[in-house]
Image (cartoon, rainbow, N blue to C red):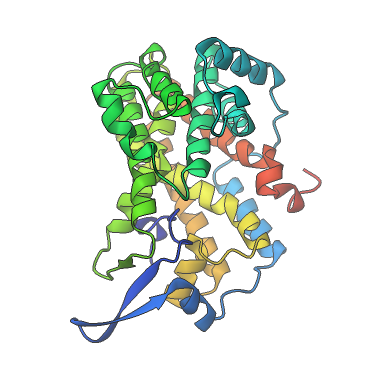
Length: 348
């Protein structure tokens, strides 16, 4: 049985990605679009709702996670608005290009679910605004990277950014050390700058043919675009020593990415998206979507189990992880306008 954790979801797959497949010799390669491959293998049919529900139910049971919804934290939302106004982050139209207000709910929901265990309310505000900024970037710079392409250089040299919104993000990143210190702060900053880089790579490699020999390339880009290291580090308070959890970070990051892929699958099926990881993997392996979906869910369970075992000797670090992973599921179940999981579990 193959393991799906070797090739995670790629944000850039839907953008006319071409894959190189073997021909008669290593030097003769045939180019085929992902869409063509999917059509050839007839993987475009919707997977049944019952199948998806059963897999998610089994996964939550294996991870000992309850299905529950968290009410929207209006108080946190208002605190974020106040903080943005005070720090002059781009929360309204007076800042011109794409204010972050419409992206704030995603930040509020993740901060109040995955990080509900954090006692420092200002840290939750920071995580919420940070998430809103990065969600805005994912939307605003899909078709044009002007401004974001010079962000890292300007950040490192202390120059003003290309617009007020990016300048606000740069100032926010300089506040990481108000909430996290040392190695965790370094990792959060690095992951954030890598995310900026992944946005540029995503844009500049549209339509690029991917060699079948570039087996590590998808993982390389997915790691940058997933920002999973930052969200893993957010989980642990500064009082928990880095040696208590650093060995768990790789599996923790995989778990963040793959849990999202599993819990996003239903909405992607509703939209009949065929460029996502599960659809693409099913096409390339000649398997059904539900078979790939089940295997990915199994890998998620293994990741959660591995992290739990690594952290078993530190009750505080383990409690933080368990608080996050349960809350991370609640992020998806509570954000129903995006993930539509209430369709699968209407009575929960």
